[in-house]
Amino acid sequence: MEEALELAEYLPQSFANASEQAYLDFVWSAFQTNYEANRYEFASLAFHLLYMSFVSFSIWQIRLARPKPFAMAMVGFRTEDEGSLIECESPFKFYDRLKESQIFRFLKLIGCTNQQVGEFAKFVKRRNKIAHPTGTVFFNDQAAIDSEIADMMKEVRNIEAHMHPVILELYQKFLRDSSDPEERQYADPSDEITANFVHANYMSAADLVYCREFAVEEMVDDDGFEEIKNLHETLVSMYPAQVEEGVAA
Image 1 (cartoon, rainbow, N blue to C red):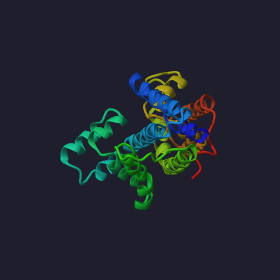
Image 2: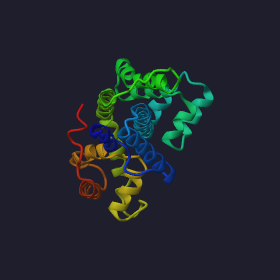
Image 3: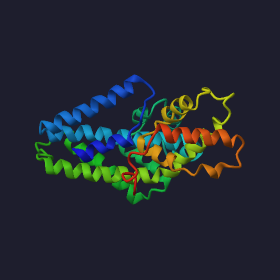
């Protein structure tokens, strides 16, 4: 159970709307309730939904940071699917257009190999076996589900490690776009960070570790560097690192 709860560090700090938050809260509750009641088969289904939610948030961030490569990666999809993926208003809407196994192909945009993508996607096949009436209980003891969770968390950490450059691309873009207090949406740095970085980009605690550790001096030649530095220092004070060891590859 303890390793499963670590997944919360890789899920967003805030969501676009209340229904998304309610959905994740419900799935977490379903996982914990079934796990504690020894209904491990159902607990595994709930944890799979949490895992796939993490993947969808990562794909969303890739789309925001690298729109042109993202569009190129859609070559081969039906034309109507290409347009709808670009226009998705929520990470959860990706699954209205694609099969779960297809979504993993976008992880190649962050340097994942075909073999790694296969490792990330293997849990979909396992879930499909559980989700259909087979007459077999796959997870009939705690050791079995704990082993599955450990495998899934290993891949979560691997994906998060590959996301490092993407997170920093989004962070630097935010710092530049928000470097003028007169032009940005919120004059107060903390409000601007919360609304237009953490919230808008579905940032997790693990993502924010990368931002905390960013060497802001790399942007010293940017216009508005003093305010960029102020924004960075504000973020560091707002979001203390919590999972520095957990995001290692």
